[in-house]
Image (tube, rainbow, N blue to C red):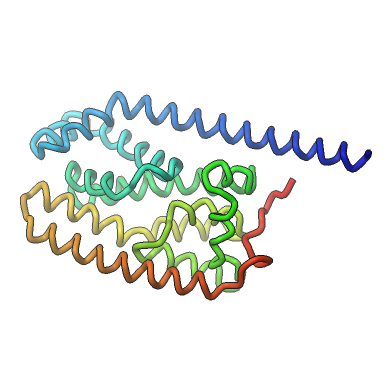
Length: 247
């Protein structure tokens, strides 16, 4: 009987954690979408026309950038939103290097919030977005001695499932400072490649666009191959990522 009461209490605790996580995420997304509606939507809509995009950014120098940072933040949290088109759009509207900076700020903020939320609410939060078998398939982070190095490598190379890895990282013993360094520095090459392509589209340098996209495609295929090989080398089953907060 005592065991049943304990299990029931654990289930109630788990439900409270999931509810708290949902409320937190819903509030953040709602606030971000509101600001996006005010500033971001007209900016995204104007991206079809380079002159309009640049004019909107000039007329709303603060608002347009805040909206884009928040949009990139939401993209990290809500993993089904693709990041590549948004990064290209940032290069289109703000230029290659300023666009890359804006994207990195948003990505880093989103990754920070995800990491802290997973540390607080544990695996139950990750399972709101990904099935258990998908989480368990990430075996590359199971070696504590190589954790930081491998995490940097898989975030550096294109073609790796960075959205899923962002959530799984919170289930590892990784420190916050290390995670912030990895998620900002290691993602810089792929982000700046996209913003360079966006800036090139804006300037009608289509040769550069084709070259950048071709290079990105080759790197993505190679990166996926490296990722698959590294992940398959790790032991399955008992070595899966452990939840830091099992209560």
